[in-house]
Amino acid sequence: MSVSPQEIFRNYVYAGSLTHNADALAELFTEGGVLEAPLVPADAAFPERMEGREEIRRSMAAYYERQTGGGGAPNVEKSRYVLHITDDPDVFIAEIDTVLGGNGEGDGGEVTVSLVQIFRIRDGKIAHLRDYFTPGLVS
Image (tube, rainbow, N blue to C red; front, side, top):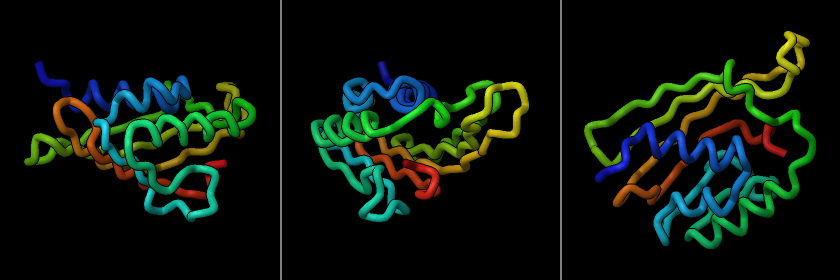
């Protein structure tokens, strides 16, 4: 049974953005999977490139541990995404507008982060993920 792009994306968002579960996130990748954020400078808190499931696990656990406060939690009801399925069955693109912060009362403390993620899949796992987002919004 193959895993759909929708399932892969949903599992990735749940493990990463919603629960900050580095173990679950790493298990979504192939053993030698790559997670990279090409727009992130080398000295940023978010790792620019992680190669291999264990490096993804270690690096993301350290990143999640350094995050402070709840202001960066996505507002699921206000956030939106579109998955673009390509001619290559092992590639899909996620176009995302994530709403962060605020208290849900329209207090103006919200910010929308727009990003694009390119997923390359092998055997139902993420073999390569390129995550393009604004580096200044990641602390």
